[in-house]
Image (cartoon, rainbow, N blue to C red; front, side):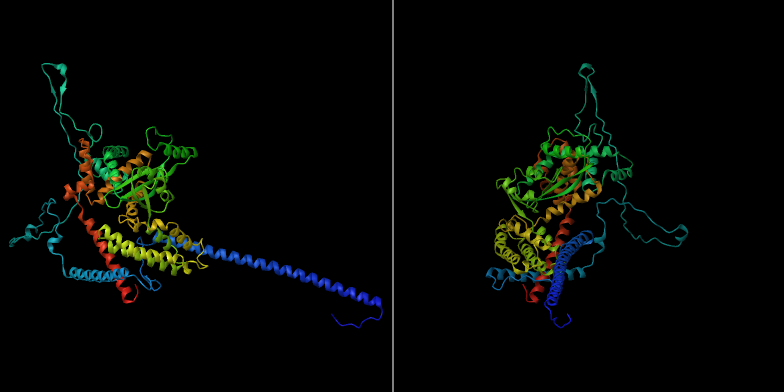
Length: 600
């Protein structure tokens, strides 16, 4: 305000005071409005910041999901990690126990020996060159000769001194033959009322004995071993001169499964005699029937009826059924089971008389199986699943993930060291070494690095850590029983047979078709686990079954393997052994690298 001389009269003073009060009131109102505006702007800023934080969190989550999807599409199948600049190494503490020190020294000595052996074997392979005889084809293969000579006009004045022999392997289409079996018929000449006498006819695969067991074996092996659907099998048979319809091939498959069903059920029962069984599942598309099938005698009629009735009522063209795989820890057997949904009634039914350990992922149906079975079944969790969940958080939390994975890797290195020991020694090593590493994992999960503001409970790493904490007791169960493996990878590998087949035959047309597939996969999967010639095994047991033999124990793959050493596929064991040797060499070199850097 401009300074003005004070008026002399009292009225003028009052007017001036009133004017000044009006100006003060107006300025106070303006200040109040500005304060409200500032407050509103502050709220807007806070809201924008909160929105920005949420967007940042969403971006991180989406990037992790994108990375996970890209890995699933284009990433390597192996979960093995190469140590990099930011990779942490395992530290077993400032004051390790004498047992731990002794085990570490033994591991280093073993690693040095493994690397030396690998280098020596590599030098021998370089020096050794395959001889000409190694390249010859097997002697039992039939051979025929073809002579290639010079034209007659070029042979004048020349003397034949010999031939250069070149062996070339040929392949022709499968040969189909029709066996005509003549059954003699005799009649009583003196008494025609006695009818005709003929030799007893054996039980055929189908009515009328139109197809030999070898045809049934080819159909089943092509579908569930080579993963060829019926329409491709038509082309293969057509190349040999016979074009069957798809319904004919389906009837042949059903006949083979009907004959082998008791043996498949026996194998499933024998598998449950093992102390530890792994279980996994995968989805299979099931076509919804137009009308409810007859389930009056089916043992699972209630659950199947409930699912199918609901699908028919809703007009669903198909439903997602499930194929379950079971892998015995010690017995060389596998088994499959088919259910119309991913419900716990499947494992509960199959494992109804099983007593022992069940290893699998932490699906809700497995978690309470010990309660449902009155502690008859003890659940053990899979460390591969836990590691996979942690590994998915690598890009957002590289330091924490590197530390946790280095500790988990140490658990696997202990398993690698003790795999050839007996059960008592293996269990002792697990309780001393593996328990020590598990304590370090639990300690790190509760450390400040995992409690930082960036590791929120709902973040990917927070969820992964929560998964490990919730199932900690089940994850540690492998240290209580030597028969429990550290993970369920063997059973997961088993389910790849179903996944590969599913990409070819696409779906199952009925519940009966799914159950047939489970029984045939049980037979074929058990034969593969015993490194058998699948077709030779199926052909022999099918003929014996059709002949009336019921000694199922003599027809198990392990018993059949002992009687037919010529049908063992030795190259499968060689490939597994070579892969295991490569893995051991990599781990040994990593341990030596840790030693050279002064880290454990």
